[in-house]
Image (cartoon, rainbow, N blue to C red; front, side, top):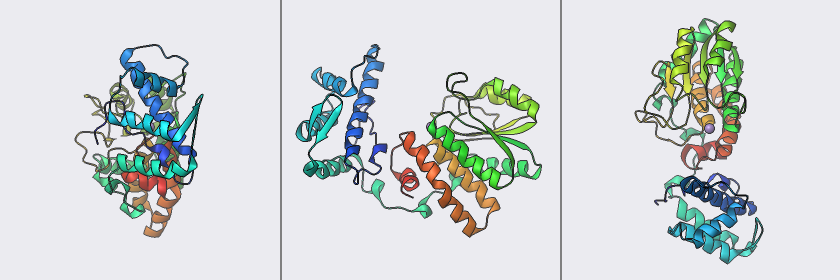
Length: 316
Ligand SMILES: [Mn+2]
């Protein structure tokens, strides 16, 4: 199904949907807020304090979005819910019908196929995975100081913790750096290199960020620090070629079969590849199962679509 720009399916709230009907409310409001944001962006209007739902209603009145699906949302709302302020109340008898309806409209059979941990793709399908693992093993051999550089949001923090946990378990000399949302902002900065180089750090592994940090990676290299990037954000024209590896499913030259992993999902894939090097099969499988909860939190918090590998991560 093709959606108009800005109305892509927002599906994370489907987790636990069947058991918890209140999820539908969240879901519809979330859809409305996507429309709202898009509208504000397109029209460059200042954000008013109206609820996103009323805004959606106004938008529909103005016929700005005439796509079938938007109309369907209002249809569902009218049919099943009464509206009081920002709260939508719907009749419990008809809820299952609407959930089925939404799910069948939004997903193909294949996307909803039941899958298990064994269905996770081989991490080596990622461009750069081999180079990353080789460099990480070298860091272990030389007892180098390694930094996991993360992000301040839930996806960034869970990504950081996935690799921190593994590296500590494997006895690396490892620590982490998560930027401050207000004081530092998103992504790597040269000031972090100035901070980390004197501490003898020789390897930085980014999680949930780094794909755009061309200058910083160059600067790091000049200061004796290698950088491995793991990220899931959009890939710009110019990428930090001087990085040891750029593991990002959105790279055009990366043929990894699932493009919609969260930062935590990508960190989990690197964890899989590194853990495999140091663990027996049983211990490895147990470790994958133990750490998948953290990846699930990052996946849901970053509002990733719940199909393919994301579905496995969240279900398991
Ligand atoms: Mn993220």
